[in-house]
Length: 156
Ligand code: 4NP
Image (tube, rainbow, N blue to C red; front, side, top):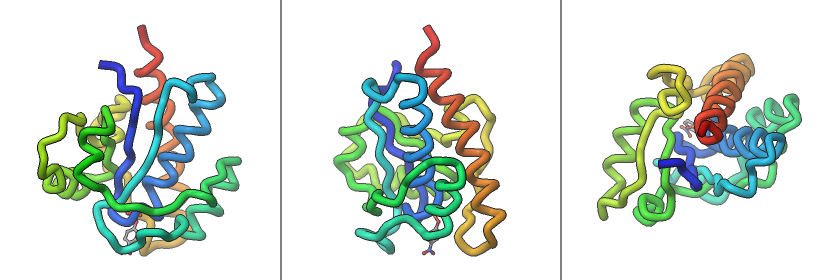
């Protein structure tokens, strides 16, 4: 099934998944695919609800002409498993936490972002505790995975 709604998930929803949301939206706009996709992100934790993305993530995204400064952190909720076709995780710990949050057995497909995008089962490392370089590594992986995701959706 071709997904029309995608929810990106990480632990905090301030580093990786807001970036994935912003990059996928940016790439979808460039390809003229934005109107066929609902794109959002959330965290498995409740630690940063209501916050903007991490400053370092905002700066890194801006270096690549992606503006995520207006996005607001929220937590994954049971309704998301009904509202979204596809839930894409950054790492395997996210996958475990996502499955545990699906109390009401919603039908959303759950996958590692990289795996769904045809990059194999790679985890996108959490850059939160490291230096600026980790944000660029995450950006590069997310950029490739976003392109793979849109290629897959656009494929006949
Ligand atoms: P994220 O990174 O899951 O990519 O948003 C993290 C953000 C915050 C924390 C951990 C990871 N934290 O411990 O607050």
